[in-house]
Amino acid sequence: MIGLQDRTPTRSPGVSRLPNTLLRRGGLVLALSLAAAAPCRAEEGNIFSNLFKYGGTTVPPSQPETLDPPYCPPVEVVEGAAASRTLAGDTVRTQYALARLARECTRRQDGSITVKVGAEVNVLLGPAGAPGRFDVPVTFQIRYNGKVVSSRAERVSVTVGPGEAQGFATVVADDLQVPAAMTAEYDIAVGVGAGKGAGKAAAKPRRRKPAVAAAPAGGGDAAQ
Image 1 (cartoon, rainbow, N blue to C red):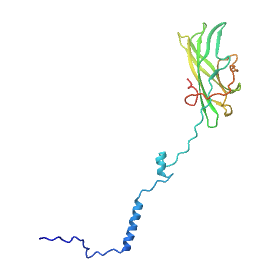
Image 2: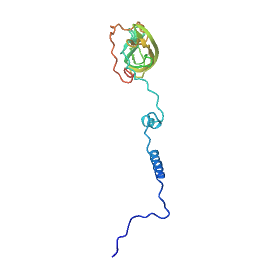
Image 3: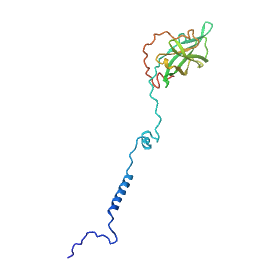
Image 4: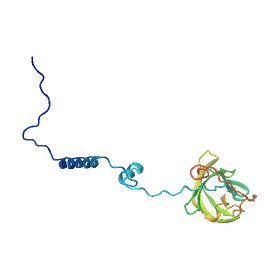
């Protein structure tokens, strides 16, 4: 009968027990090693947190505050300058007239407003008229309390082809300036030709509490 062998591990002759002090030191070294291997906690404002937050290693510059929508009144026609005629004796040769009008208003950081105005011009041949190319003057104005604050004169070329009675063309005036002190109540006016009352705006009641115009892309209509 084979007896059970003693399985108690035996210490090799050449190996001696390590002193307790070395064991304690070894444990300390192991603990420090584990601590060094542990992941570091991200700190606010460091490279990695900026990378996750902003997509880069640095904090991007602060963005300007969103500006309030600008007041953008409808375009008015200068009194006496909605249309202009050229005559051949007592017979009408051509008539220039305003058609569709549009505007777009943008508020700037300094509180002022820039206005873009578009006007469609129609040239109609009269009994004495003939097809051709016509150069039409158009005036754009910004007014405040009935006085002209900013004015721009443009010319648009309108072609009436053979066999046609009329033609259309569009002209746009950019960057008409409205000072910051006048942005709550101002007028936009357009006139064509050299009308008799080209310097006066059409009479109308004054606005007491102008409402902000609900409009896309900065306010107003897109100039056409």
